[in-house]
Image 1: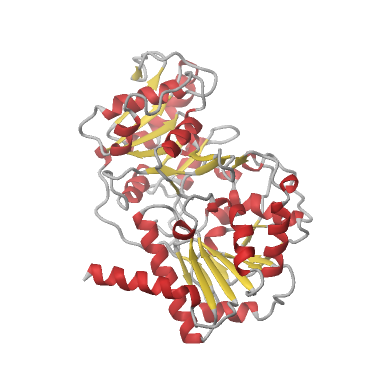
Image 2: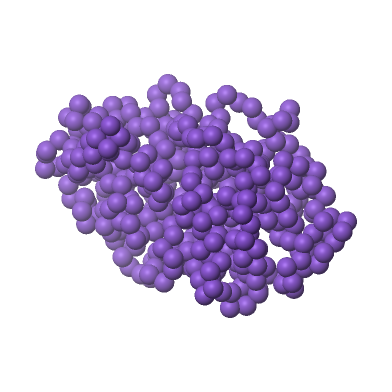
Length: 461
């Protein structure tokens, strides 16, 4: 029965290339899915649902699934899509709708929203958020409170008119106008900055939603139920530390999330009986820590009772219970690399994506064993950035990185509260100008009265 269902879904996807059989495609839907069977199946279901709605309403459309149509491109940055979508749809369509796989689309309501906008104008529409203060994840860009810069919450979808798409594609094709930074840190913010350089600002509309309410046309909806929650002892938490921070940082994690971790080790440059640290014989480095992280990976590869490895910093705050729930949706026997995805030169052939280390790097035991093989991932030096070097190793091994918005390289104050709505975060990073105990209680501790227990919060993916 499952086989027949899968065949039907694939057939519907094939039909969705021309949803109504008409020559003009008013709508182009692009589903930007993560590369795993779980996420691909969700993208297929969304694509077939959109196709079905378009046929019922008689609305011409095309549906793309990114991992299917552009498997080798960093479509998560949006930029590689511009010229391709413009070439294919720039003269026969009106709107491009960018979605993630965990969304519900109500096409009739979306039509009702867009009928109030002219498709002949360069338009950018979505759920707008704004920074309230300068933040490291946006390179401390100045915040103008009188005229704030708006950027989209990509989880709720966003719409580009085709005139804007064509303008962006033309600008992107001029290499001198491409983004100046090699790093992709916050793709939705950086894309909105590029759109702004084409003299178009994001227009906020309440129909793009993080939580269900009347009038929503696109709703973030990660409601998939997964298998039995992963047991705490199946996750090995590897905390990276050094002598300098033992007394300052380790009491904080011991008083917060480490109490919920039954399988962990604090890896340092020395063995400190006061905190139970473990030395792997790797001297401390001021930056990078590749040698230490790879030593951890080789050690964990030898452990027989572990299904998952979570590599975190000594100033990472993490919810063990929420991570256990999240990992129940993945198979530790697969090659799984999970966390907050960043990129270095990601839009170029030489570039790659990587899991930013501060928010936590999660690896399946099967992947750990592969990374630990001789010659697979050998650090050129101990102080090479470990997260970036692992990204290079994963690219070489053709292992995709699964991005999750539940992980955070920054502190809670580094993000607009709107971006922290609708989901229960798994991690935050850095204690700088932060009361870490209070931050943990509010954002990560399910047992704390200070925590957000709103029934509208999505607790699954």
